[in-house]
Image 1 (tube, rainbow, N blue to C red):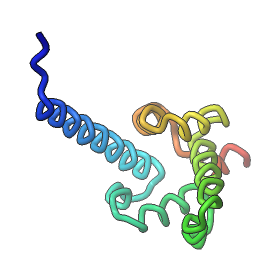
Image 2 (image 1 turned 30 degrees about the horizontal axis):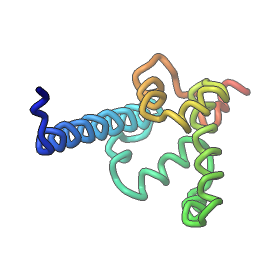
Image 3 (image 1 turned 45 degrees about the vertical axis):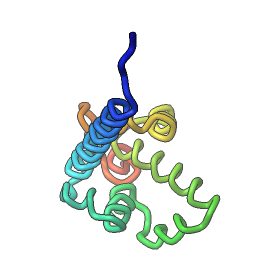
Length: 125
């Protein structure tokens, strides 16, 4: 007989969300440090978006575009694509970052990807 109670399920859910949150925080911290930015910047609300835009080579005023419904989806797709390019990854990796961020952000962070400059600028030159 299964004796799993609602309280047990709730504890499992809380620990799962906590583990997921810590994984994504560690991944974003590592991505920022790989890009030569301070890791702590990844956990500061709004400032992390400014630094992310610096990493991908977009102006800081793009934060305002995240406030416009519909446009924000397009902007985040562009930013994720540019982030993938900045680390030498292709469009398929960017699609993975969009649809499966809990897998692809840790791969980018803890894998052997090197920061090439905004949008992969070093690789283009």
